[in-house]
Image 1: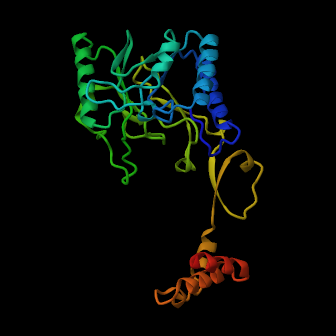
Image 2 (image 1 turned 30 degrees about the vertical axis):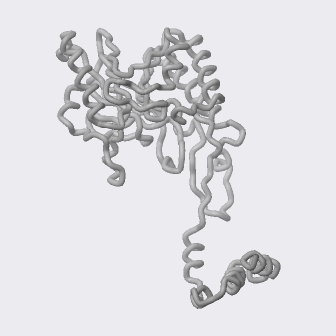
Image 3 (image 1 turned 120 degrees about the vertical axis):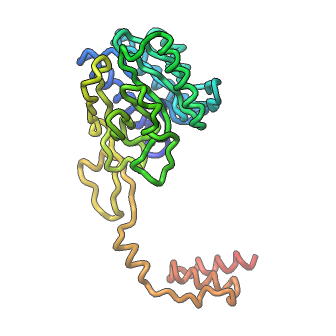
Length: 321
């Protein structure tokens, strides 16, 4: 939930997000799903949560929890949810704590906790800037399960929020998805990375449910349906890309089609125009250090607006003042 200025002139971005949440609850009820898990970043602006965004989310959740009282929500804190950092055993102050205070019967913050069900267990680990802190919490929670005597009697799932994006070599990973310590888990569901991906047979980057910025151009969005009590059933990605505006790129000058009018458009200069512009002859002698400031200004104005005499006069007066 956020209140960005970009693509949000009339608050429509928050409206689309709440509509997606409404759809998730309705979908869950229709398919007899009673648990919703979100691996972090339900908010966006760290310690500066927008009042408009907060109220929109509270109104949405109150309505849905009232209409679907059997559905429970379990979340962990992502880096964007936190007003302070998580260091060691001390969890950062999370804006998601507001939700657990207001909806104690329906919402549970699983930071450093195990959701224990007779048929499955979900472990929640919040975002850590230090990967060592992440592993310390994982080790402690695994130890708690061993003490309870789980010993693999029920499948164990990990919900986490770290940078694990092997498809993008430009972004360093926080942890290695092939680390042997992940073998304790039946499956791992990771937040933080906005793009949905199946990293391995057991590691899934959940992704965001709607387009957020230019990095989402061309990406499919949705959520995952998981049979938690039967690990033999492969998780299914439910595509809802078309239920919210997509972010698309278009070159300046091209007409906007009917479908495109409802999307968020990022305009760019066509490559052909950029190439043509770069091939224009450029006389570097007009911009050497041997020229006076007045001469430089005049030459610049002639390049950008050759017919604007007033602009040249104003520029010369400026450098002489």
